Length: 491
Ligand code: TRP
Ligand code: ZN
Image (cartoon, rainbow, N blue to C red):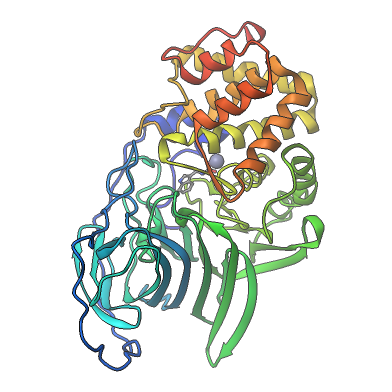
C-alpha cells in the first residue's frame, strides 16, 4: 500500500465529507525520468513550406473554465486518441506514442496540448516533423505548415518517462490525480486535471473523443481500460492488451489499471460485455459488493433511460485510492467500496459520463445526481421510511454546517458536502415538487437531450421549468442560495 495514496478518511460521498473538507493537499513535486525508444517513422521531408496566412494564429492555451486556469486548449477539437504504451512496472517508466486525430476550428499556426511532466521526444503533425516547446503543463506545437480551419489533422507525440500524479487544487483528498504507481500496480484516476499526467491531450471535459488504448506489460499483469477489450497478444515475457472506447469520452474518464487481477466476464444490460477485475485475494464479501450490478443497472435504466455505453464493468483496486472514480464503462473502486459506492459510480455513467459537465463549476450535475441515485437505490432496497431518515440525516448535517450552494461550490470545496449532500437534496426537492412521474421524465429527457454531450445548470433549470408549472422555490433555494434553506419536510 502506497501511503501517499491512503486517504485518512473515506470518500466524501459516503458521509465523511466533513473530514475531507478539512484535509489539506499534500502536493508532490513533479519529476520524470528520461526514456529512449525508436523514433516515429518520418516520411520524406516536406516540400515547400506554405506561408501561413495572417488568419493563422495560435490556438488558445486553455478552455476558459470558472474554476481552473490552463485546462484544455483552443483552436481544435479532438476526435480520437490512439495511445500505445509500454509500461515497465519495476522502474515505473513508460514509453508511449499518442496519435491524436483532431479538427482545426480556426486557421492554426500553432496549438497547445496539456502534458504534466514526462519527456517529449518527437512530435509529428500530418506526418511531418513539428517543433515543440514545453511551458509548465503546456506542450506547444508548431507545425511546419499551418492547419486550415475545418481540416482534420493528425498529431503524433512520442514521449516517455515516469508519470507522476498531478497536484489538483480541487481534489485535496489525494496527493495528485492521474497515473498512480503503487506496489500492486498502476491505477489511473484523473478527475479533474490528471489525464495530462499520462498522455498529451486536450484536458478539459468539454472536448470528448473516442479512444484506442494499447498497453504492453510484463506477465503476469493484466490491463483493464475503457470500452471493449478487442485483443490480447502474447510477446514472450510480456503481453499486450488492446482496448477500444467508441463512445465519446472526456479525458478525465480514461483509465488504465494494471495489476494481477482475477477477471469475471459476464453480460450487462442488453447483453453488452461486463468485465469485473478483482484483486486475486479479494474476499467473498468484497466480491459480493458487485453482485447486484445488473440489478442496479436495470433499476437505473428504468428511471434514467437505457444504459448509455457499449460495455460495463468494474476494477476493484488493491489500494484505497481516496475513493472511487466513474471512469467510463469501467469505474475504478478503491479498496473498501460498498454497494452504495457501486450504485453511485454506475449512476455516473448517465450523469457525468454520458452527460458531461460543460465546465468544473457544474460538478453537482455529476455528484449531486450520482449521490441522489445512491439515495434512490437505498430507497429501493431499504424502503421509503429508511430513505427519509437518511435524507433527514443529510439535512441536519447541512443545516449545522451551513454548506454553500451546489451551483457554485467553489474550487476548494469542489468535492465537498455542497455537491455530494446538498446536491441530492436539490433533486429531492424537485421530485417533491413535481411528483415521481414528471421527475423521472425530466431525468430521462436530460440524458436524452445531452447524450454524449454536456450539461449546464442553466440548461437543467430550463428543462425543469418547461416540464412543470409546480412551485420550484425550494429547489431554487437549495440550488442557488448562499445559506442552506429550511426544508420543512426534513425538519
Ligand atoms: N468522482 C469521484 C466520485 O465518484 C470522486 C473523485 C474525484 C475521485 N477525483 C478523484 C476519486 C480522484 C479518486 C481519485 O465521487
Ligand atoms: Zn461521484
